[in-house]
Every structure is written in structure tokens, then in C-alpha cells.
Length: 321
Ligand SMILES: NC(=O)c1ccc[n+]([C@@H]2O[C@H](COP(=O)([O-])OP(=O)(O)OC[C@H]3O[C@@H](n4cnc5c(N)ncnc54)[C@H](O)[C@@H]3O)[C@@H](O)[C@H]2O)c1
Image (cartoon, rainbow, N blue to C red; front, side, top):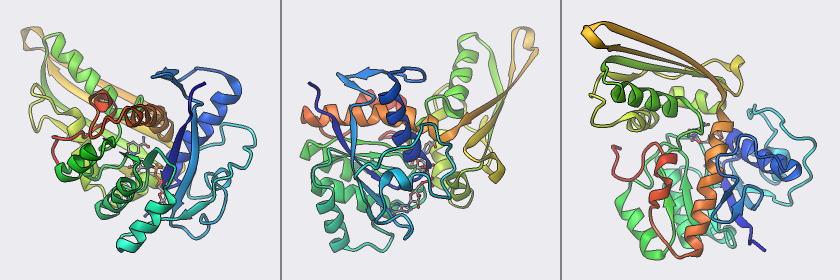
């Protein structure tokens, strides 16, 4: 019998809602629709238990995880029937002003968790570091899904490696999002021998994540460009427009990708793609794999960064900060 992965989540936002609900849906239905790896290292998508959760909003703290995922401003839809109470009470998290005592408190509350999934807002590197420090003290693997540099911090990565604890990040590449589609199209262009003239992507969304990134988008912009970077993609020719927040889109993300190129005889080629997805689903479809990879490596005492996670991340160690 497989031992289920014990996961703690930091930030009970849309991405955690999509993950918690999706796991419940797949457990109940036995369906494998929309799952990239139904089984990874012997672990099914249902072999994940939530053991702790942290938030900062007073209306979330002290309530059950299964209720909190539906509280506004979360706007990911209900994809399952009624969820039973999880038995996990959401606890007070660490804020920007956290001192060592607070980090110790959270480390204590992480006891028993194998993997910490960090899904708080991007653009707060000190907070991300404080949680990574707490996870390290608690002996847990850490996954940084935000665009803030955590796995790209060589000293922190080295401490995780020496402790035999996996540290995965930074920033996930959605299961089927703008970065994955844009990257694939640019690669196709190159494979077919066309010359790139210019390319851009525009992303619009109505989630709290989009609202935050419109104001604190610097690390995200860098990370999105990291996801597209390759030697063939001449710097400056591929651009990412500033994100747009349109509340009525709710959890939908609408992306436009344009590519201008030259083909045989120096004639022009123009390609426009519109992609509409539920943004938090794209994150959950990848987080489920990162969690299982981290748990598997932790159980084998393989610490630090894991090469197998690279295709799932926008800004792995060594990429620009
Ligand atoms: N496809 C995607 O959705 C995608 C892709 C790549 C990266 N990400 C990143 O994943 C992260 C989570 O995305 P989301 O859509 O769930 O965001 P969200 O804004 O819906 O959720 C974040 C939650 O964290 C809470 N929070 C704020 N400060 C906190 C703290 N100090 N401690 C604990 N909780 C705190 C917020 O109140 C909120 O509930 C974001 O950083 C986002 O940029 C998302």
C-alpha cells in the first residue's frame, strides 16, 4: 500500500482551491481526464493528503480548508459536489515583518508535513524566504510556485541540498498556458527554418493573482521571459506585454500570442493565437506533479533541485533573477 504524501499549503487562494477540489474529484470519479501523469513514481493524484494550511486574512484563519477555498476573492468555480470538512484548520501565516520567533512557530506547525507548497502572492520575496526557512527547519521539501527568487538563491539551495531536502522553483509553467504554447510555437518556427521577426504575448485575467501582478509584476515579467529564453530566441524580439486585470473574466485567462516571421524568398508569415483557460487549473495540473516529485525525492533523501522538475518551472536555478 502506497504511503500518501503529506502536504502543507501556504496561501489558500485559487490555485489551492483548484488542487484541493481536483484531487477530491479524481478520487471520487476515478477519471484521468486532464491529468498529465495519472501515476508518478507509484503515487496517484489521489495519494495526496493536506495536513496544514496557512493564510493571513482574518476571515480564513481558524476555519476548515474545505470551506476557506470558496471564500472571496477566490473565484475558481466549484468543480465538485459538497466537500466534506478536511479536518485541516487554516492557521495564521508569516507576514513581511516576521521575526525569527514567527518562523520557529510556523516550523513547529509544519511538523509532519513532507512537502510545503508555497502558493502565496508573487512579489514578496522576504515572505517567500521566511516560509522556505520554516520548511527547512521542519525538515520538509519546499515548492515555490511564485515568481520570487527562492530556488534561484544559491545559498538557500545549497542548505536544502545539504539537508537532503528538495527545493523546487521558481514559478510554475502552467500545464497548458501561454508560456508553454508560445515556447512550442517558437520552437516549431525554428524547426521549419523560418526566421523570427518579432513576437509578443498579451495576458488578461480576472483573478486576485492578476490583480496583484498588475501592481507587483516585476519578478513575474522576468520569469515569463525566462520561460521563453533560448539561444535561438534573439533578445528583444520576443516581448511580454504588461498583464491586464479584467475582473469579469473571473478565473479565466485570455492570452493572445502573435508571431511575425520570414519564410522562403523572404516572404512574410503572420500567426495569431487566442488561448482561453482556467488559470488555476493550469497551476493545479502542474502542482500535483511537483508535489509527487518532491515527496519521492524526499523519501530517497535526494536534496536540492531536481532536474526532472525543469519542464514544469519557468525560472529554475541558474536563470535570470
Ligand atoms: N496558472 C497560475 O495560476 C500560476 C502560474 C504560475 C505561478 N502562479 C503563482 O502561484 C501563486 C498562487 O496563485 P493563486 O492564483 O492561488 O493566487 P491567489 O492570490 O488566489 O492566492 C494567494 C493567497 O495567499 C494569501 N496570502 C497572502 N499573503 C500570505 C502570507 N504571508 N501567508 C499565507 N498566505 C498569504 C492570499 O490572501 C491569497 O489567499 C501566485 O504567486 C501566482 O503568481 C500561478
